[in-house]
Image 1 (cartoon, rainbow, N blue to C red):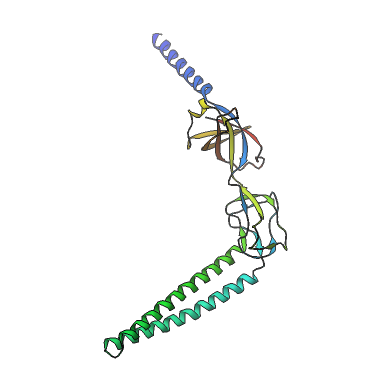
Image 2 (image 1 turned 90 degrees about the vertical axis):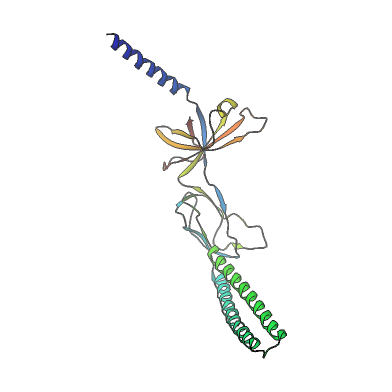
Length: 255
C-alpha cells in the first residue's frame, strides 16, 4: 500500500510539473507577413515583349516572368563574339612574332630594342584580348537578364508591367514584379522586456493557425521605437503549404 501511495505521489508531482510547464509557456498573438518579399526589375535596355504571370499566381524558381525583345541583346552578343575572335587571332599572331623575335635574339641577330618592342606588342595584344573577353561576358549577362526569372518558389503579389513598356538605362528602373516566398512566412509579434529575455535568435517555436501547428525559427528580435508600448518585435519564420494563409492572417506564437 505504501508503494502504491508513493507511486501515486510521484505521478501526481509529474503531472503538476507538466501542467505548470504548459501554463508557463508564452503565447503571443502575431500577424503573418510575407517572407522574402522582393521587388524585381530588368537591368538592361529593351522593350517588354512578354508578361507571363499575373497577380496571385504561384511560380517556380527559375520560371520566366517577363521577357524583353531580345533582338538587340542578341546582336550585341554576336558583335562581342566576333570582336573576341578577331582579337584572339591577332593575339596568337603577336605571340608567334614574339617567339620568333626571341629566337632571333638568342642567335644575336636581333637587337635588345627590337625584342622589347615585340614584348610590348604582346602585352598590348593580351590586354585587348582580356578586354574583348570581358565585353563578351557582359553581352552574355545582358542576354540572360533580358528574361526576368523568379529567384525562388514564389507568389506574385503585384504586377506593374505590360507588353510594350520601354526599359531605359538612363531612367530609374521601375519595379516590374513584386513577389514573395510561396511556402515561407513571417509571424511578427510585439515582445516586452521580460519575454525577450526568455527567447533568442535561432530558437525553435510553435506557430498555431487554428488547428494547424508549424515549427518556426526566431530570425530576429528587433528594437522598437521608444514611443511604443512593446520594447521589441519578434520575427519568426515558418513554412506552410496552407493556401488560406496570407499576409495579415492572425496566428499564435508559443515558446
